Every structure is written in structure tokens, then in C-alpha cells.
Length: 187
Ligand SMILES: Cc1cc2nc3c(=O)[nH]c(=O)nc-3n(C[C@H](O)[C@H](O)[C@H](O)COP(=O)(O)O)c2cc1C
Image (cartoon, rainbow, N blue to C red):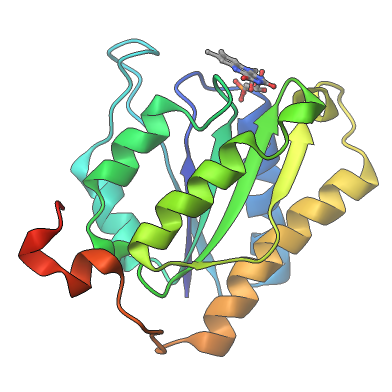
């Protein structure tokens, strides 16, 4: 089975890249039956203009489970990540396990990106993992990452993997609004 991780930052490398790398390593170590692949934006145009190649859309659509990772920017997800989300068809995430990983500078912004992502994931009818992982960026500043941080990252990877293994092939109704209202809905 395949886990695709979405690196939603326009400014690699950084704390989010480190957090996501630790999550990916945990899934590779613990789940030999799983392939893990990261999709990341093309930053060759400069960080603000980061965009996505079409193969990122294909890879997310073919994944059995997805981890979406975003830093908190301006109290929300990055514009870069939203660009990819806007390229995805509803089938890419419908009834698919999706786990959320976010990083911010300020602890009181812990729900900022997550709550926006949960709204967007409902548009797709995604099977969003019940708990997300949030870290203050300084958790990844030192050479050593604390054991409880590592544990949470591994738990988040496990959530996506276990949901996919247990619920493979199932789909859940009612259909997302965009499917139910078809041509009347935009997108
Ligand atoms: C444009 C921009 C906006 C940001 N907005 C917020 C914010 O609203 N709240 C917050 O806690 N941190 C904010 N941050 C800090 C980042 O979330 C934090 O530094 C994070 O670690 C960046 O990810 P990176 O280290 O992978 O680059 C912002 C950073 C940037 C560059």
C-alpha cells in the first residue's frame, strides 16, 4: 500500500520538513508493506510563486492514505498548499484516510491551520483522522527531537496507515455536496 505525504510549505527545508521526515521514517521502519512518497511544490519560481506539477495530483489520487503537512501562515494553511488542494478532483481524497500535521511559531495558533484543513477535507468527503499533530517549530530546532514529539509523529502516521488497512475499499455516504449537486456546484 502507499502513503503519500504532502509537504505544503513554499520554503524548504525547515521545521515542517524535519517533522514530516521523521513521520515518514517511522512508517518505513514500522510498516514494511507500505511505500512512502512525498509530494512537494516546485519552488524554482521563487518561494512565493511555488506551484505544483500535475504528477503531484496523480500521486495523491493513487495513494491509499495521505498525510497533509502545513506550517501555519497568517493563521491558516499556506497558499501553496491551497493551490494543490484546488487542483485535486473530489475522487482524489473521497473516503480516503487523511492525517493532518501542522507546525507554527506560536503555541496559541495550534488549531489555526487544522480547522481550515478539516473544512476543506469535508468538501472532498475525506476520512480525516480524528486527531491531528501540532508542534511549535522550536521542537525541531535542536539536534535531538524529544521522545514525546517522535511518539506523536509516529502515532499520526499509524493513524493514516491503520485507517487505510482496516477500511480499504469502503466508501462512506452521503456523497459530498459537490457530487450531490453536480453541475449546480462549482467544481
Ligand atoms: C508568511 C509567514 C506567516 C506565518 N504566520 C504564522 C502565524 O500566523 N502563526 C504562527 O504561529 N506562526 C506563523 N509563522 C511561522 C511558521 O509557521 C513557522 O516558522 C514554521 O516553522 C514555518 O515552517 P518551516 O520551518 O518548515 O519553514 C509564519 C511564517 C511565515 C513565513
